[in-house]
Image (cartoon, rainbow, N blue to C red; front, top):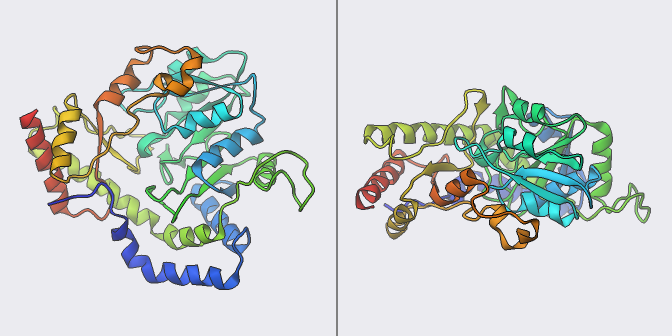
Length: 371
């Protein structure tokens, strides 16, 4: 049977009436910029993430950009981050004129390697961006120990809303956290949207000011900011979906466990590199990533049989043309390069049936037999 990588219709159908009613309420109010929907969502997300401040913004990319702007990061500063992530992580650093400093990843979790971070620190290091990749937290204690006091930690939690590190939600552990509500995320809007979180009152005030062109009242600008506001329509839709997030996460985690059972039952545990879930982390599986030396052949086989799959991050940052000016070379970050060659995402959304899961596993087995 065909199995899509992600089926947003399956999530939407049970909520359709509530979502359409919410959209009509906002349309009837004609309040599309800021207002009660934004304030309501920010309060609800602050409670979920156990942070003092949640600031709704226009996208996950803008969340990263705004967070660093509010921290005063710019030309002459260095920001250390993983070379293996979505482009916005490094692109936001470069947009501010700062220098992205890339490091390798932990081969088990694909998250940033704290030892590599420690080796990359210089007197110009202003911040570190750990990416909680694929829905699992980076090792935040080891990362904090790897950097000097005063270096900011900007958590890129764009794939990890609801993920926990030692019982604490990501986004409230570092200096600030950033989230995305892109439609494919575990909590997705009907377009772009994002969030910046912090426990710091002063930083929160700057974030709120800078998302409105740097002014607290119209036509009066204390600093230069931008138009980073979250639309009220997107906020209202997210408020309908937010109460269901825990159940959707449970579904993803249940499917991850079922995949492990099915692969093991077929004797494939040693041939398919299944995701590693750390004991001190609560993995929310924005993606379910397997590692296959025969990745490209397996992908072609799955594609031909309409089994959804995707290659994430086939070109690490240090090998991207736009960052050639930084002088990195191929082979410098072997774990990231290996992950780029070998990893493949399989369907994991909570609405998958057991029949679909069995079909995915059976087709992967067939692909491995052919490879």
